[in-house]
Figure 1: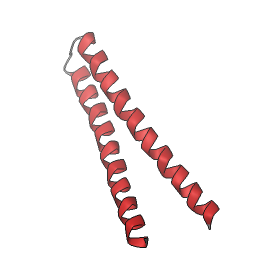
Figure 2: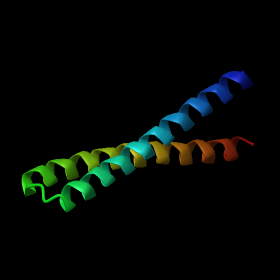
Figure 3: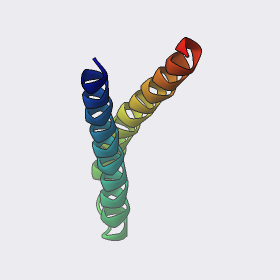
Figure 4: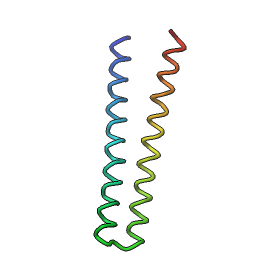
Length: 75
């Protein structure tokens, strides 16, 4: 059981790390597009994409925090 728990934690950590990288990449891409003078419609679409990545990251981060709280309560 401990191996399964460790495996799911490491998978979840990898998902969280990937979500963080995606969010950061979306922000970087948006900043570069703005510097290159992309039209507002393109920037707005890219900003929406960034916000979706941010939402995904925050949701995963909250799950991480709630898992930690559950583990502390169980011990």
